[in-house]
Image (cartoon, rainbow, N blue to C red; front, side):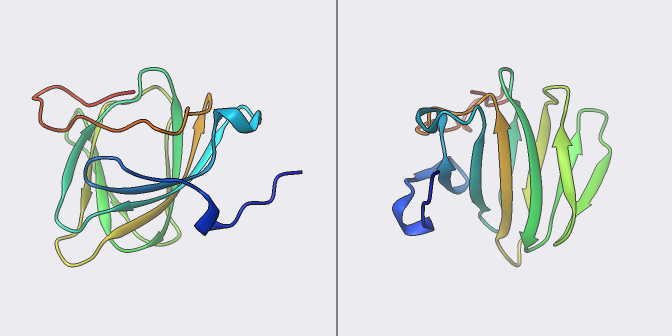
Amino acid sequence: MIIRTRSEAPTVDWGNGLSTRLLVQADGMGYTVTETTVRAGTKSRLEYRRHLEACYCVEGVGEVVDLEGTSHRIVPGVLYALDKHDAHFLIASPDCDLKLICVFTPALRGDERHSLDSAEFSHY
């Protein structure tokens, strides 16, 4: 059994916010659970080529935009899942941070960070 408090889990600055890595590859569960904060007013160009991800919003307001330009409002109680390694834009409201509980499969090592300076979609 794994028991871990938020304060015991490593926190990584992933580029436009913080990601507390509650479960990682070394835990042997086959998936990762994170508490992710997306800084207010940021727009992140993201794509997970080796991972599927589901995110559940617990705080804040934002949107996820697909490559066709379709925008989906993200508010507390909304889940979005990137079930096809979808390239997307994650945008946090200019007024408040966006807080998400995320699950990745397969599991992350735990030290991954995005490279958001490129014109390409950041991936890991």
